[in-house]
Length: 144
Image (cartoon, rainbow, N blue to C red; front, side, top):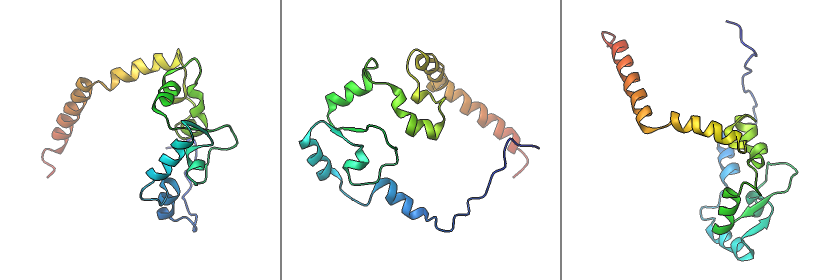
C-alpha cells in the first residue's frame, strides 16, 4: 500500500523523555506562591505565563500576555469582538492543524461546533459503545 509520505524513525540520541516533562511542567512542586506574587503585580501582565514563571517560552516572537484575573479571563474567553481564537494558531494550530476548530472564529467556529456537539452527545456515545461491544463480542466468539 502506497502512502503519501514515509515515516522516519525518531533517532535523536540526545533525546531524554524524562527531561521533556520538567521542560513542559517545570520542577517547582508548588508554583502558587509565585502565581500569587504575579497576581499582586496585576491581573494582566506582559509576557507569556511561561516567561513570567521563569521557563522558556516556545511561542515565537509575538505579543504575549498572562491573564491572572477571573474577570479578565472571562473577558478574554467570552468577548469575541475583542479577542480572536486565531491567537491559538502558533500553539494549538501548529499541533492540531490550522483547520482545528480551536483556532476558528465565528461564524465558521459555530457551524463546526454544532456538528461536534452532536457527535459527542452522551446518548450517541453510549450507542457507539454498545455497537462496538456487540461487534467485538461477536468477533471474539470462539477465539478464546
